[in-house]
Image (cartoon, rainbow, N blue to C red; front, side, top):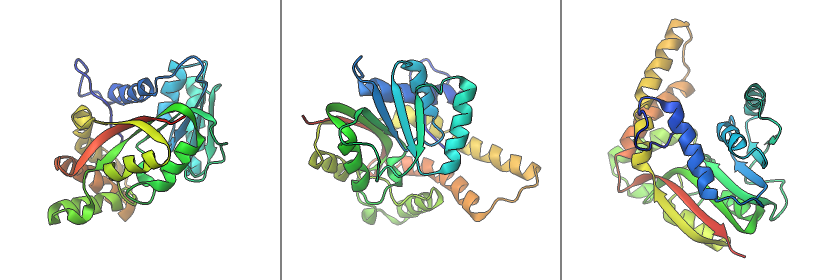
Length: 260
């Protein structure tokens, strides 16, 4: 379940255009110049943002990394079908142990992927992101963010949160204050946090219907869902509840530059 960016005038019942708009917002905030030729996608998944990037910037090179091998094969298939695989490179690896050289990226982004790293500050992710980014160049990170530590949550919120991170196999969501402080300590500057919670609300509301549709489809096919899949589906529902605790959770875009 990924979240899209709603802008006024869009049809809130059509999810794909909002997903595509989120990709575009990420790239707009990278503020690429003609000299920025190599961009890294840390945790690219099935590479949907990469395909959007390749269409917007056919003259640039985008490199994606994912820790899931089957995602590479599926992404390459979709890239070939779209006819845009020429300036795309997707590799198997861990974005906390990148093989890329220091100061090798003209821009770096991570869309709903840094939450898979250990720790509330996502230290291993931040350190590698800032290491490979060239001085003076920009980064964009979009994800769900905690506003306070989970140990301070009440029982209902704690149940929702713990169920979600278990169902989505996450160690935790990043804590926004600790995350931005870690970026500063690793050479980040001009850091901005933009709350996109209301912008992604329409796609969040798609979750229950997507889950029900998936569940019915599998029932018709005679497939029994295992505990892992059921936990994932449950998390999609509970994500709506988590998003309502505005003092504790937000969906944010964090941007900034690496100091020269």
